[in-house]
Every structure is written in structure tokens, then in C-alpha cells.
Length: 296
Image 1 (cartoon, rainbow, N blue to C red):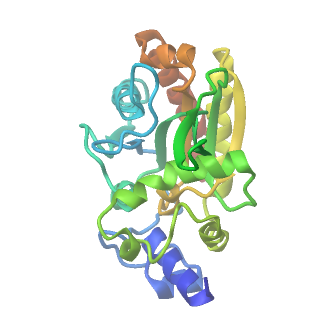
Image 2 (tube, rainbow, N blue to C red):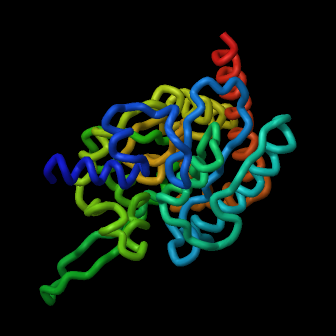
């Protein structure tokens, strides 16, 4: 991938005008549907955009009795209600409220157009993987390798690093919905979620919100741990759904749907209630710090 193609891909993913990206100026330019003005000196924290992952014909991961798209929508709706009930002055918007698919670029653009202070994408993890196996007849078939013992929570921020195999699997899985979008080659200028070399593009992203994203992600993980959840940590990963967000943004994996115990927990009212409480408490802590810094 040459530099010109790489630059075009960055612009397509981030959704900003080329001259603005090249001069690195993220404030003070005219507002449009896909290029919102970033208000860097805003002292108040008013809006959270919640993104239930997948949806419609793109179910995400499957457990024994449920699909990722359904669990995350349930949690997202409860999170929206809890934010507006328990954090005075803060509203929440969902990127989808029903079982539909929303393209990656539109999910972050919803946050951008509404000048959100925080973008949270909610997902369920899976340790299962498909493997091509050559049979005795010489033909290849695909079989699923099940790993029901893997458990825990982890939260990602957008970044580029040299991916280990396990991390590459996560990035490929979470970005794979791009392949189902119409004309995805044109929308994302050749980005292929199945091609590891494509992920070098994220090294060119201006990490304006990296530090704040990591801070919020750490708050989220600390809250999960407070309820006894296994902590898989905060990680940087090349995730297209976060790349276009013009505010601190995280993708949180609330548990492994491939683990029967965690699947049941995420389906239960108790489990969903705890997850929502964890996220609301993390938002409260982040909001307090955000406003304290802004008032200095």
C-alpha cells in the first residue's frame, strides 16, 4: 500500500477533509454532517453515544443460546436509561435501537454530528475460532475450535501496534462487518479486514484522544474488577468503529459469549444490571475528571 492510498484510507475512515487532516487542526473548521466541529474547551460533559455492536444480518458472535447482537442491545438500552437517571445533565444516544445493522462509519458519525463527549461500543467476546482442516479425502472443511474456559472482560482503544495472533483475531472479527457493507471497497478505499497489512494505516491516525480514551477504559476495567470479573486489561487495537470518532472512544467486551457461565451472566437481569452499573460508575468518574480539568 503506497502513501497516497494510505492517506486516502485514513481520510475515508476518519471522515475529515484532506487539508484539515494534513495540517493536524481538529478545531475551528466548518461543521458538516461528517466533519463536526470539535469543541476542545467545553467545560461540561453532556452526551454519551452508546453503540450496540453488530445487528440485523450481522449477529456477531454466537453462544449456546444467544447471539451477541441481542445481548449488547439489551445492555445498551439499560445503560442509556441508567445514565439519564443517575447522571444529572447527561443524555445518551444509541446508534441503533432495534435489530438493524449500522455501517461502521455511520456509528461514529452519529457521535460526531451530535458533539458527543464519549463514545462507547459494547460487544461480547468469543474465544471460539474457525479452522480449515484437510480431511482424509483431501478436501478442506471448516471446523470450529471451542474454548469454553476462556473468560473475562477487556476494553480497547483505537491504536496501531504489531498484533500478536490472539489480538489479530479480535481485530479481524470486530472489523469483519465491513465486508457485508455494499461497496465496502469504495467506502474504505481498499481496506481489507482480512489482510493484516491493512492495519498499518492506523499508525497514521492522529491520536488526539488516545490518553483520555485509555483513562476511561481503565476506569471501566477497574469497575468490572470491583464486581469480581476477570480482568484482561486495556489494550490498543486497530478497530474501524473507533477510528472515526472525534472524541474519547472505547470498545468494551463485557464477557465471553463462548463461555456458558459468562453467557448466562450476560443474559441475566443481575448480570446486565452489574455491567450497566460498572459502566455508569466509570462514566461518573470520567465526567468528574473531565470537568475538573476543564475548569482549571
